[in-house]
Each structure stands twice: as C-alpha cells, then as structure tokens.
Figure 1 (spheres, one colour):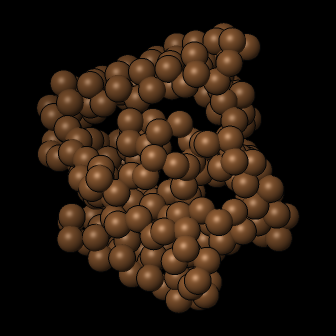
Figure 2: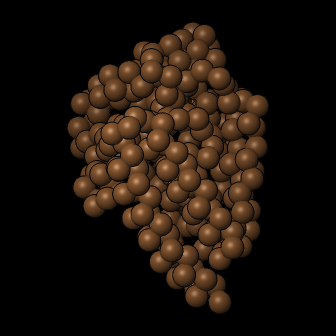
Length: 238
C-alpha cells in the first residue's frame, strides 16, 4: 500500500510541478508577486496531496522567531520536502542553490525567472562572491535569502559539511540569521521513493540578531549554528 500511495503521489507531484512551473513563468512578466502566488500555491497543493495520499502532515514551530524584516535563513537539508515547503514557511525569499538546477526543463526555468541565486559549486570563491553580491541585493529589496549550509542533502541522522556562505552573507549585509531545523528526511528520505506517514516538524530557532551576527567571529558563529540546528534536528528525530 505504501508503494502504491507513493507512486501515485510522485506522479501527481510531477504533473503539479509542470503545471505550476508554467504558471510561474507565464505570470512573471507581471511582476514578482503574481509568480510568487503560484509558487506558494504549488507548495500548498503538494502538501495537501502528501497528506491525502501518504498520510504526511506538517507542523511549524517557532513562528514567533520569524522577523518582519528580511534575513538570512540557514536551514537543515535532508529531503526534497523542505524545498517544497519553503514558500509556506518563509515570506518571499530567494534561494541559494546549484546552477545546474536551472537546466531542468520548466521547473529550473521557473526557478531562474523567480529570482534564484544559482551558484557554481565547483568554484567556491566565485560562489561566495555571487552569494554576497546577489544575496545582498535581495536583502536590500526586502526578500530573505534561504541557504542550505550543507550544500547537498544529508540523510536523516547524519550531518553534512557546513559551509560559511550564509554567515558571510549575513555579516557583509548586516542581516540577522534565522536557523531552521526539521525531520523531513525521516518521512521523505533523501533519494527515497517511499513516503512514510507521520508528521514533519519544521522548527525555527531563536533569531540571531544582526548586531550579534556582526559582533561574533565567523568561526564561533558557524559552530553555534551547526550545534543548534543539529541538536534541534536530532530532538525531532531527524
């Protein structure tokens, strides 16, 4: 039964992604807000399907930590689930992701048009420069920047190699950092076909103010972020 439900969900997920990618692209000439509307509706639709077909629902904790002003969101990366959910979790934002995703027909094109920061992971110095430049512009425009410090998905129960891009961007842009932990990889595993019923909990941790970000050296701030995110992730079972 799990196999059949997961198969049906994956088919619907692919179809919905195609349709909503087209809508994002079609409405982009009318401004960011209309295209963002469709991106957010895509996210809601996918999670409605996930609940109906696979018995997975989401809970969001720590909403009180989300600031009114734009910030740098530093998130755990375990699954495709957090990328799908992000429009529901964070006000209008820009992702930092690998440029290769732009080459995916329709979905990648929609990502590029909506204002995503695509980096070349093979050139770390150039990637950092681009994150600082493009991410700084997004923050000035009032859009938060979402970055996965591990760079790629780490299976539930494991920790990837945390990179300093998000911290550097926040320090250079005088922005706050909002850490995000979750357990998505347990129910929607990395490269996993089967989706297991249960609750995915997204937990926002206390905001690290712009003043604290600026006053703390990069190394200790990186250590704090990794420790806090990984501890919260493990406490959620992720």
